Image (tube, helix red, strand yellow):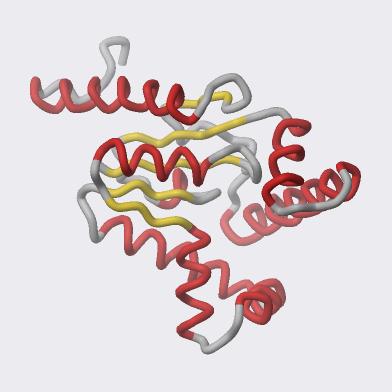
Length: 188
């Protein structure tokens, strides 16, 4: 089963993707992993590769395409990345994690050891605006459009294990439908 986990920075996508991969005993690929692999392939450190990617749109496209290729090469994989729900159209389950900005900023501040909340908030707003502009410019994707996703979960209110329980339920339903030949939901 292919599962994508997407969301804005600080929403918990990496934590949930790892948990789901462990829960289902399957592999996982993240956009960050692909970024690191490609930096190594180009013989660059992460900072240099990041600067090059910022100035050359083809790097974003290469990273996104590489992640898609890896996902399609596996029948069972969890794919984590901001656009994975858009790019892995064949995924059986596409998840979007959301959380209020304040919650995400607090997580980012802690995770990235940013000294003060104002700096973390400014950096988060700038990153999100930059990414939203690139996604729209490169692919015509509005990051606020959640229509590709099957399951939207608020990670502020649920632990990773609790989110995993929702995902486990969804996976069980998808597998049951596959066994009985039911391709779509009863209301479709």
